[in-house]
Image (cartoon, rainbow, N blue to C red; front, side, top):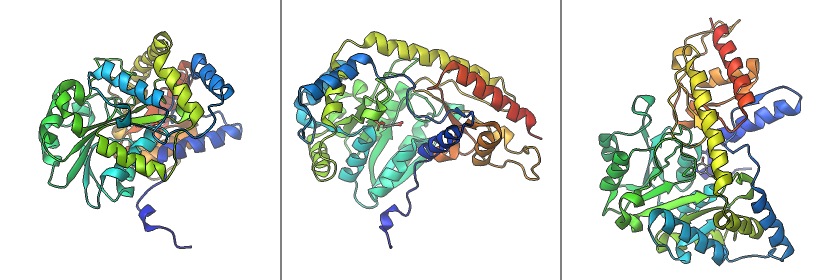
Amino acid sequence: MKLAQRLDGVKPSPTLAITAKANELKAKGVDVVGFGAGEPDFDTPQAIKDAAVKAIGAGFTKYTPTGGIPKLREAVAARIQAEHGVAYKPSEVLVSCGGKHALYNLFQALLNPGDEVVIFTPYWVSYADMVRLAEGTPVLVQTGPESDFEPTPAQIQGAITARTKAVIVNSPSNPTGAMFSRRTLETVIAAVKGKDILVVSDDIYDKLVYKGKFENVLDLDPSLREQVAIVNGVSKTYAMTGWRIGWTAGPQALVSAMQKLQDNSTSNASSIAQHAALAALTLPLEAEIEKMRQTFDGRRKHIVQRLNAIPGVKCNEPSGAFYVFPDVRALLARKAPGQAEPLGNDERFVAQLLEAHKVAAVPGSAFGAPGFMRLSFATSMEQIDKGLDRLAEMVKSLG
Ligand SMILES: Cc1ncc(COP(=O)(O)O)c(C=O)c1O
């Protein structure tokens, strides 16, 4: 069967593939340490689960308006107002099936063939493919550990052309955990202001910050409101990845276009999950969320320290999210035992780590950054230590 060409340039998600491979090995009884997961290892807080059960009991089991139940849209708008001081009408908020779905709808609604979207590298795998699926052109701007994964002003300005339609800001970032400085956000604002360019502010890790304070472009310039789409959701903050609730707040024309698309694709996100998300946004869960953040922070410090103690591995300290992105370039000229050829690249490095040492990580090239790998520390301290013992063993074994 001849299938749609639009999928030809799109790769299956490498992070999901690694997780699937690690799970397959685990199911066979192999003791694999998984650093692949892009989700908190904590359970969803009980009060949120209770709200979902209550919603089922109360009969909230039917279609809802496509854009979400009014109370949830209002709660999202209220949160943005409280945190960023910018007002959104409920109609300017669209609830989708996760942040990923929100972003997919956004690019479908925004882009025409050839429109460019500036993406800072290393980038979350899905951005470039979602842009391509919408017939847009990803414009990749390389950053590295020497600038703590921040683009320079010249790089930001140089990436903007007459075809630029959007700039994605994901701070804290997946995969590096790096956060943009105020200066970088200001440079982004200055580069787009007054032009037909949207800042897509993917704030999904805004509550998982360990150094400094979270800021988005609207904190610095509320007058940019008509040029900003805020994407967020409950997945990471509330350990609710499986519930699939995310949202977009943005200019009415964009949100209405996204809603039209959603009307004709998924319709509403799950009615029950929407009630759970409403509970997440409105119940006093600060203490529980803070506990998770502190646990992540302890692991973050530990994993960075242990990685940097392995000869040949260099790791920046992330400011947020739950990932570290160590540089293993210095090890790629080395050979695995019994191999005639050096490892050569991060994919072979990560394959050796999984096959010979039973540790699952995602190669940096999946995020546009060859020579690195991503480890998620959304796993227990015990697993972190076990995994890093194995990584150290592998490094020692290289010839
Ligand atoms: C940077 C980034 N944005 C958005 C998402 C989407 O999350 P979800 O679809 O679970 O809300 C993820 C999830 O991995 C992410 O890492």
